[in-house]
Image 1 (cartoon, helix red, strand yellow):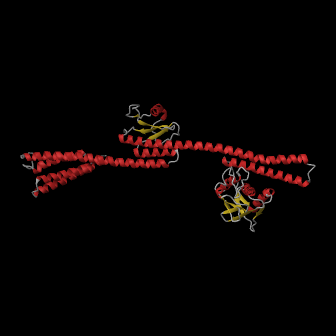
Image 2 (cartoon, rainbow, N blue to C red):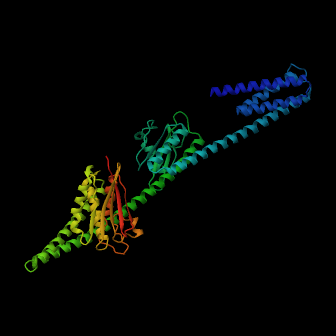
Image 3 (cartoon, rainbow, N blue to C red):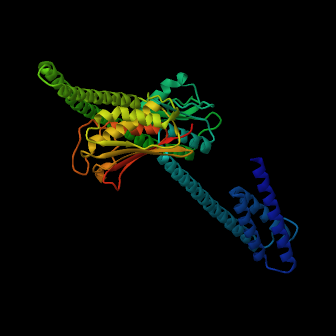
Length: 492
């Protein structure tokens, strides 16, 4: 502050010195006294402009009046004035200088006010933009706290009844000591604190932050060293209005999201119960019918019929076991409890295990597994990878026409192994390809058939592949069927 005042004094002294020298030079060349006064008026305008102070201009006016009287009026070098015209000229000069000073000061204040308003508008625009891009209540409050602290150069603190309290290293006040005052400000939506009608003995101001959607809080602003100006108060209140709007937006979004999640849960429950009841009823009916028939007609039927019935019972039991296993896997995946034990596994052993699992369920289908000359490995959880391939083959068996061919192929590189399950059994409708890996998705094939099933197999395949940081996708092929491929990392 002292440095600024010193600079103003230097500017005033230099300007007055230069104008006085110019006036003395004009007088030596016989230039009229009115022109000398014009030089003084210009110098006064310059001083007011540079110092931004009306009082520096008025001091310069009176100083130059005495200089003009001393140097240029008769008798010279005295403060006596013989000619009344000079008295009128000096009075007019003083009035003009004062008028110019008043007008320039008002103009400067308006310019300064306009610049300050522009700065505030830019700050508010930036703040609104940043608040719009904030994606959580904590982010919004944290941003507003930093924004107000930097622009006000004061310690501040937010308090919210229904939200977590964000603490600063420099806390404004101990909340436990002033909880009563803070609660009063929030409940009555009234500005309280230093120099306010209520609780004026406090060393800080309490700005209530109150919204329609259960937003009850306050902003505490430190006023211990100096009080908040009217401009600062307006700036704070405008910022808080934006803050309340942003918080209400997030609260509305959070409420809608919670409602949506609850609806999805209810939908999931109903779909799951409906699917489970259907998928359990069918194999249980087959098991009950088969075992009852064997029990009642065991001595009347031939051995081939017995073997056929037992094979059907075994297939339905295996299918039921696969369904229960998929259901348990889905539960673990949704609860983030699925643990993978990845290690180096021989691909040929995995594919042979898959063949043993599905061989009894092939019926009229043919499954061909690609054979490689070289021994190749994959870095994966063998049991989970076997389940993925088993689910994909089962899916192909259920969704293809009789006598269809199914192939399991793979290609290995240094980074990953790509597995393919290919069939020629009719393909998948294009609109179903986008949702084929969704939970409880039953996709029709190109013949319009919809196969029974809870729609868990492919969604579980996607989840398992994702845990291996791989990608799974499906498409129709040139053989008249569908191809599902997925990648598994070859290395750790």
